[in-house]
Image (cartoon, rainbow, N blue to C red; front, top):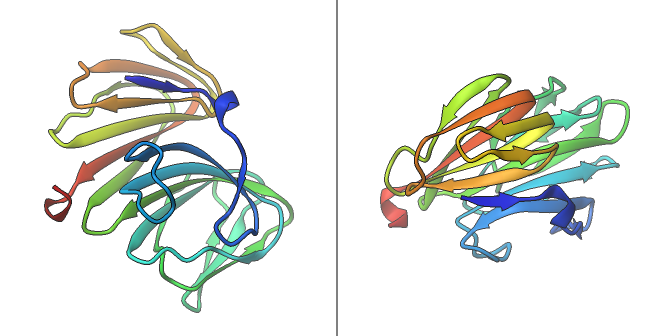
Length: 191
């Protein structure tokens, strides 16, 4: 298990320069924007504009803070205004963002299609967590409040995370607030 503290993440410009992002984790470690298998970040969106294109990448975006946005994905408008409701879309789609009243923070999960798949689950209570299948990884990120991995006694504050691989025994996660559980599974092509 690896702890990922929020205060240790530098803010870097988006691929298209339109905002700031803080990478939570990626695989392989230290992968760049062109060679990640999966990548998770928190982004500050202060202005409307286009999203960066990522060919061959599936994205899941979740509103964490702020009034929300309308994402126009290949000409179809989607309102993303409910906090903690994951919204999937293809990374190569022409995507434009219109803010619904001010800046926001979103939780962004990206996976290279054909190499990995991701599932985002939002939890607000106590739950057993593990990377249950071979070739899988679980990322826990606290989106609001705090959480404790009870078996190990590890405390996580807002935006902290824990990366759990398939060799870690089952943990019990107690969430006081909201956390995202992101399960990554390597696909057949990605092995």
